[in-house]
Length: 469
Image (cartoon, rainbow, N blue to C red; front, side):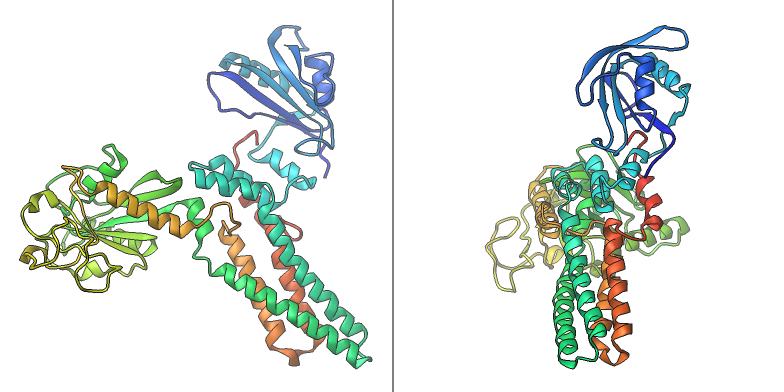
């Protein structure tokens, strides 16, 4: 891919800083360097140069300049970096001069990376990993992003694609040698064996519990329960700040309020929600609807309840992963609270909260709880945080292991599985039509890295990058 325009952009955050980096890429990079900071530095060697406005001769800054000659650059084109002093006026002056240079224009979001893709420096999966690496807020996200950006995921995608291509080759051989029955039959049998093994691998991949997507987007925890169960107070305690309004007035929380936490290196999004109850208020009803929707989409629902609160049908929310927590435990001092873990099947567990052993339970606490907490005293908060972290870690697994991180990955793999299953289960369709199923499977797997038919996903991917990347 070649471009006639040279692009430039500030690649460091705007504003005052010690150093600001301006990048250029395109055919006129050498001419720009010759004009604003002669002599042009040798490729891949840093040099201190005085930057001047070629139109007036005015000194702009003294900077460190690097030149990367094509094709040995990130974009595959001639590139340069101007490492300036980070004053706003300096940055503004340099960008203004560059905008007046012939053939130069400001870069669009993600345009440097897009040129790298067009010149074969990066594939789509690597670019997505690079975007995730830039956006990473936790250690686990960093590990997953760097594994994908360095090609670990791409290598796996390409192995799958190579397996289907090998099966295609065998089927084509069988078609070419159809008059030699033994040769054709053997080739088809080998193709079917390859397709069957690969289909099993892809189906296992699809059954991963969305761990890569959860790690990338965050493990979603919804705090749910009746009004005044302590949801907002607990959210503030977990966030260590006043993220939600706390009031004794029922129905204070009307919308879903999110707080992002870093627990054991995993991004966890904790959501405070409207209390669930019967109400005539249309606004509160909408809040409850959003609560139930958030609970259905959550990775973990933490149901909060006071010991004296009556049971409610909504406590049995349709959540695949849930945790029941007794709140305001400091108000129940002196009463026995049966807090048997759900992992214990009946009987008396030594793991109870508070650790009072078994026995008769109070009428206000005649139900099981996984944990008991008190925001006022801090009791149980560490245990609750550790349990949420444990479940989040279990959901994401090892962040360095390759995993699907986007819906489009899952969609393309599902398409490949469908086509492979048709190839395997409908032999009566004839080899020519079955070969077409393999071709469609190859196309789906090729789109994971952008080997073929990538235009439909390019805009979606590159627009997420900041200008200068």
